[in-house]
Structures are given as C-alpha cells and as structure tokens.
Amino acid sequence: MNRQNILKELAPCGLNCRKCMAKEDGDIKKYSLALKRLLGDFDRYAERFSAFLPVFRHYPQFRDLLDYLTKGDCTGCRAGMCKYPDCGVQACFREKGVDFCFECDDFPCDHTNFDPDLHERWKRMNTRMREIGPEAYDEETKDIPRYQ
Figure 1 (cartoon, rainbow, N blue to C red):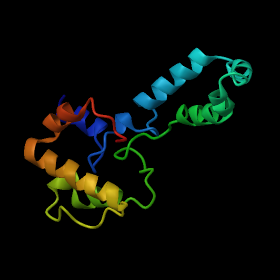
Figure 2 (cartoon, rainbow, N blue to C red):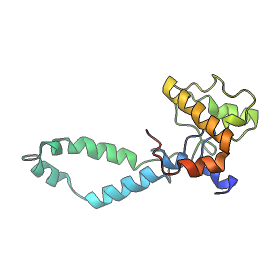
Figure 3 (tube, rainbow, N blue to C red):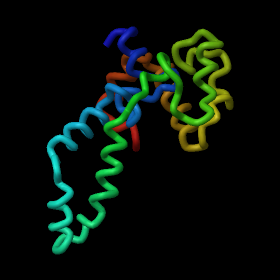
C-alpha cells in the first residue's frame, strides 16, 4: 500500500482507522450492517427461543449494541475530529507537521492524554513503525484486530 493510502488507514497515533468501531466506512460498521440485515426481524424469534435458550433473553441489549455499531460516522483523525476524549495527538501532529508520532523529535512524550494501557500501546505501535516504516507496519498488522 502506498503512503497516501496508509495515511487514510492509520491515524497519527498508529491506530488503524479502518478497524475502528466509529469509522464511517470501516469494517465493523460494514459487518454490523450485514449482520443486522441478515437478522431481519429476529426479535420475535429471540423471544420465542428465550423459553428454552436463556441467552436470547439478552437479545434486546444485543440489538441495541448492534444498532450502535451500524452508525459509525467518523471520517478519521486526519479528516475529522478524534473520538477519543481529550486526545492530545489530534492537535499535536498538525502543530508538529508530522504524519505519525514517531516522526516527532519529542517521541515518546506524555502529550497523548491516553489512559495507561493505550499510552503503552501507542509507544509500541510508533516504535515499530519507526523500525520498519508505516507501509511495512500496515502490512504486518493488517490482519490483527484493533481491539486486543
């Protein structure tokens, strides 16, 4: 994949936008819409099945979550606003004029405002991109789930 396409796929922090639950044209939205379409009007069946398969008592909550996952509206961090509350990367990468955090002279820093787990993941992703380049990193991680 070329650099231009990589910039559409990978956020400045290194997370894969295509795999994000909020991405307007992402995989999660696409597959959630497909599942919703396949299930059709399953509510009445779930109610009937719940008499002998108790897990189906939770179907209304599942349907609500599935509905939420079909509404992804994010255009990506480079084109829109970051969905992570108080993300420090959003303004910083523009201010520094870099495509990815690892390209900044201050990397690694404490300006992300990420929780400790995401901050560590951010450092690992960017360190790896610095080692092999964004194109190779995208190829290396393209089949790995975003949420792990």
